[in-house]
Amino acid sequence: MAAFPRQLPFIVTTEACERFSYYGMLSILTLYLRDPLALGDTGAKEVVHLFKMAVYFLPLLGAFVADRWWGRYRTILSLASFYCLGHGLLAVLEGSRNGVYLGLALIALGAGGIKPCVSAFVGDQFRADQMHLLPKVYGLFYWSINLGAMLAFGLIPLVRDHFGFGWAFAIPGIFMGLATLVFRMGSSRYVKLPPSAASGSAEPTSTESGVSRSRILARVALVLLPVPVFWALYDQINSSWVIQGTRMTPFELVGYRVDAERIQSVSALLVLIWVPVLTFGLYPLADRLGLRPTPLRRMGVGMVVTAVSFLMCAALQRRIESGPAVSLAWQILPYTVLELGEVMVSATGLEFAYSQAPASLRSTVMSFWLLTTSLGNFLVAAITGINARYVHAGGAAEFLFYGLLMLAVSGLFAVIASRYRAANP
Picture (tube, rainbow, N blue to C red):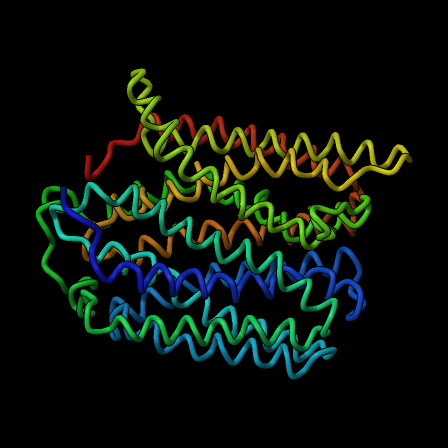
């Protein structure tokens, strides 16, 4: 059996550090906007989701630059500087709305620009005889993301409590600098495809013969069409779920106080558990039982599971609104269900996007996948604004709305997926 490429540890470590920087900042952002910057629940939620929309829209720019001019390696290194500068502005301009908006814009440019390049860069490191390892390596890649996220969600709110927002925003910036350094250290070992090998000027590969690249792209885009609704639900763990948590009673675990911000670390911890359980346990078991857990089937089940987690949040919210104090520990139940859905949709979606992409446009297809997250966050920001101005629904009704919307969209995804024919079986 072919082994993993030797350069993989550099990329995985880089991703873990970069994700620590991103989620460390994000862990305290909602309540920072709501309270010190006085934006309120609605304003904070809108800013957080508009920021995340930008983070996942800008991969279109990063993919274009990488595929046409710089290549993936140079694009990652170049845009990382904007990322570090954005963190620095958040730390130095603490308390300034304009400073926060500028810092978030630079982080969005850096994080968004390198996202499709990093995801595709991982796949570039594999030879033809190693391609069967892609499902496992994307599981490992996703595991490293959530290791960084878990540590960030657990530690950065603690830093904020003891040293203030300045240091809480500065430490993620230090980790982004470390991520850049580690990535640069592996330079001599990487497979670095030139821009021409990832642009439209390249000769089509054998996997593209007989079917135009544009037709393949259109089919993949159709499959991804319902996915933004999944992200509209999932990304609310950093906004609606945090706001719900502030209305619940914190609890202690081995002397560690778990509050509405710190409980976000549970999401990443659960992913670290679910990835190996699914990859090495449940998926092989389903295969042996003849259930064939194909990527699209996994994604469909994951969407239904995600809907269930929001229905559970709606039930929790009803208990909160009924009067008696509710322990924050109860939120662990919907977190457990939600993270099962995330692994089935997100980690699998990375695998699907890379495997179905024409070889000459893999960064572009990765940007399509990331664009689904951008559209999902735009959907949340839009619904939040419309609700605040016209509908005025709140609490359990909001969670119930999103859960039922996800169930309906899961049905649409099942229809689309049943008609899809894989480009690379």
